[in-house]
Image (cartoon, protein in one colour):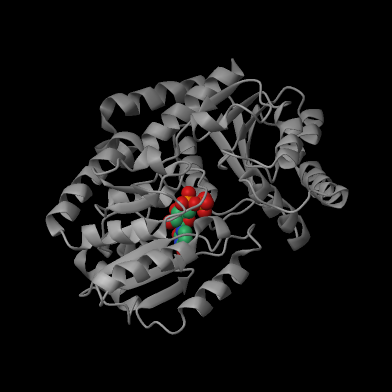
Length: 411
Ligand code: UDP
């Protein structure tokens, strides 16, 4: 296990977006946890939404006086191949779950748990990857409460994967999901829903001055900001459906011939499928100079791309929450997204973007065109998007919800 480096964050940095009442509420929840030690465990320090959340939540908790650590599992490719299969199986697709896969999962999770030093009052295990640490943790820290926070889309899991995870989830003290519909069937006895959030002061989301923005635009050359631009920012993962996004773009470019598409992806340390999906997407797009397939951009560059695209697309087939949707809406960019998982929590159809059937790339293309052809609508949707995220999906709200659950779990 290793501790990732963290940015500096203070609660005060959120005063503008949170308002005094919410800050006060956070301080009083923090007071209730002031003599407790809390540990978050996940399986990657970079790439993907969980790392994004923890990078902000953990330093703010410490600023609030809650002694909070974040540790990332150490594991090899064979473990991550198994845990990606578990992730895929929970989202409804995957190979048979073999005894060999289960053995790999158990041995790596137990080894990580055995390495853990120190005493905690509460451990938050994020996603299925570290869930197998449960028994060793319970032995080493019998008084610690264990919370499982699941960020996966559990709409339609494969039974053998659901049962495998449920066997662990039935033994945690509490489980947290990103949507009410996910909470029912994975074994946890007591559950809550906490919607994730974006961090408005992070490099990814803060406003940039002219010079900084121009520098990031240059970095994206030959992509042009003077021609229509659509972007999808996602790990290269079958569930993110970059091929569907390409299809939607092709349909839209029949009407808007100078349209450009940026498909941007990061390689998460715990996602072994990334490189193969990236190569297939890049190959598919190789003959089209208006399609830019880019990897591992700095946060400020992603920021500018989300901010300066005319439309952001999120054509996922499954989606636990989809932070990228709120990231774009916060920057006043309308989003065309699939009506799956956490996306409809964020997109209000016809208000800040459009929801489309995940299997209907043509409709996504048509919705992209209807936004590209109507600047006033884009501006109105953009303003609505900014306000919808301000109300529901910024860090102080998530943190208050999360701390309330942790206080309740500790009793
Ligand atoms: N992300 C990024 N660069 C990329 C692709 C993704 O920084 O090239 C970030 C993205 O901005 C977001 C997170 O990774 O903060 C993805 O979170 P989301 O909840 O959308 O999806 P997940 O990867 O967790 O399924």
